Length: 208
Image 1 (cartoon, helix red, strand yellow):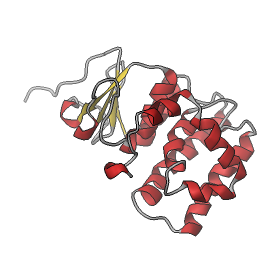
Image 2 (tube, rainbow, N blue to C red):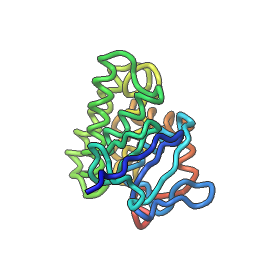
Image 3 (cartoon, rainbow, N blue to C red):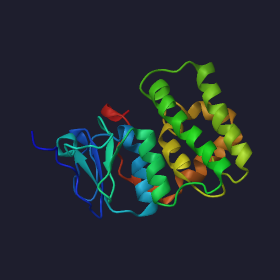
Image 4 (cartoon, helix red, strand yellow):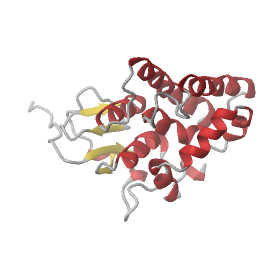
C-alpha cells in the first residue's frame, strides 16, 4: 500500500470543516461557523492568508489529526481539535501571552471555551452552572487587570471566547459580571471579531 499523501507546505493556512463552510465570494465561509469560530477570529485578527475547505479536501496523511475541524499549517503539518488549533495559531501568529503564568490562564480559558460551547450552545446549560462558568472568565479578567483574559494584550484566549460568550444563549447571563460585560464591548471592536461578525454567518446551523 502506497503511503498516504501528506499536505505540501503552502503560504496559506487551510481550514477543513463541513461542506457547508466552503468559500463563497469574498466571505471565506457559508452556512455556519461551528467549531472554527475561534480560528476564524484569530486568523482575521492577525491578517494571515487562509482558506476554508470541505472535509473531502483534507490530506490523507493528517499527522495526529482525526476529524474536522483541522488546520494545515503553512509548514504542511495538520493540526486537529478546535482548542488546540486556537492555541497553535495564537503561538504562531503572535497572539499568545509571553508570560508563562498568563499562558497557563489562556490555555485554561481556551479549554473552558470548548466545554462551554458544548454545554451552553449545543445544549441548554442550567442557569446556576452557566453562572459558574462565567465566573471563571470574570476571575481571569480580574487577575489580568488589563481588560483582556490573559496578559496585557488581546490573545487567542479572547478571540476564541468571544463567539461563545456573546451568543444569545449566554450573553444575558453576563450582565451579572461587570468585567465580562466590558470585555464583550471591547472585543466587539477588535479586527478579528468585527470582520467575522460582518459576514452575518451564524455560529450554529439554522441561524442559531
